Image (cartoon, rainbow, N blue to C red; front, side, top):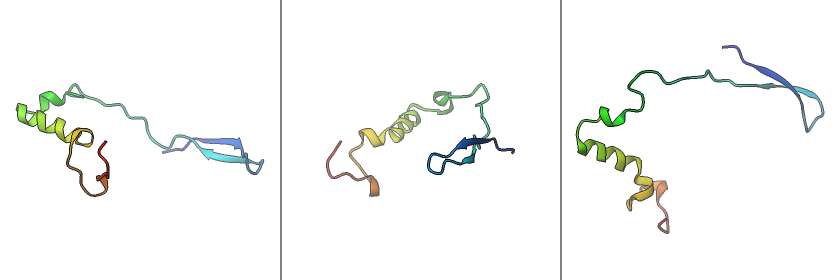
Length: 73
């Protein structure tokens, strides 16, 4: 992969420095199954478990380890 290098003037030193540009490759999700999580999960119970797991940080009263708060949100 070839990196994009930009030349800019340094604020601290007043010299021209080289700065790396984007160092990642653009990715585009592909496929017709994209974002269709409801169809991938079979039963209603599976769907509810998926949602509860994803939103436990907001709605759960059970907190674990470093997530534990002194006062509830």
